[in-house]
Amino acid sequence: MRPGGIWAAPGRVNIIGEHTDYNGGYCLPMALPQVVRCTAMPRTDGRVRVGSQQHPADRIDVPLAGLAESQVTGWARYPLGVVYEYHRRGHRIPGVDLELDGSVPIGAGLSSSAAIECSVAIALRDLFELSVSDAELIDIANKAENDYVGAPTGTLDQTASIRCIAGHALFLDAGTGETAQVPFDLAAKGLALLIVDTNTPHALVNGEYARRRRECEAAAAELGVERLRDVTDLQALAVLTDPVLRRRARHVVSENARVLAVVEALRDGSDPRAIGPILTAAHSSLRDDFMVSTAQLDTAVEAALDAGAHGARMVGGGFGGSIIALIDARFTDRVVTEVEKRFRAARFAEPRTFTAVPSAGARRVDHP
Image 1: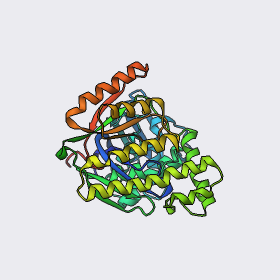
Image 2: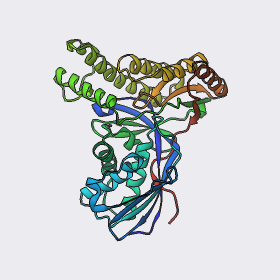
Image 3: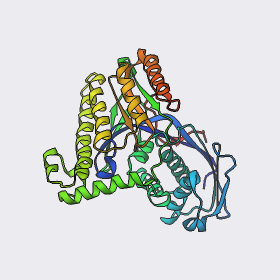
Image 4: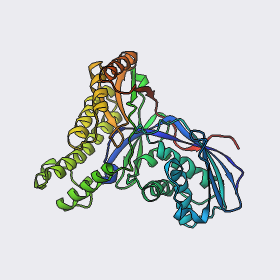
């Protein structure tokens, strides 16, 4: 057992590849500079105490042995789920104090939940010197979200939070778990990736996300494949009799192709502006075929494009959250101004904007 310390895990933004991970497909996320920090201290009394700088009134103190039956809800269920998953797998944790402090916007589709999970997961691994690989670390964090919290997400968010490195996007094959680093230096080309948080929080625990997953599974079953990643020809979808299932499958199959096209363009040294139309096509697919966009997301995308963005799309699970826009850095203020103007005209909540820089994955941030 080591003395306490501070660990951090980043949020992520997905450049391309939405709703593909749980279909065994491809994704291209990058880590954000915004992180969740976890200060962890060992205990020996079999209790887990969790606090958060963002929720100072909510101090959780529960016995480790009672985590399986815990009725704790809200933000605290994410860190408790990670502790429970370690415990369930037989890793010895005699007790722990966890104090969280996050700068990842909550509900913005930037994976604040995975940042919580991964900061706690890496802290526990290091603190108690547990023999856990990065692959198992990702699985522990994902199972905490799927089984303990009840959000049926894929592994994209946790993989990005653990495996991303600065200056790169992460090409993830969710079907095999294989990853590869892809250089993503927009600043060298005079570009920036603008994130617009529409200030309309989404909740993946609700029924719509789970419904999309079930629809994809039903489409795969009707097509006679294990997962939709096994389908590469859009013509093959014509056999789907249910138009809803056909649209859902069309998004996944076409989105996988878009990910591969973006990765190829970035790897061969093409001007990154070339990926702009692919990003915009992804938004149209998410809006029309997967039906997870909102009026706010659509307005932000349209405003960014009208102000000169090379491409723009919603990111994350949908039903709220954020968009990304690939823009010339010198026009950042112009794009932001246009988005804000459109939101005021539509009487939407004021959006929040910032530019994203590919950043490092989960790590210890104090210096033992």
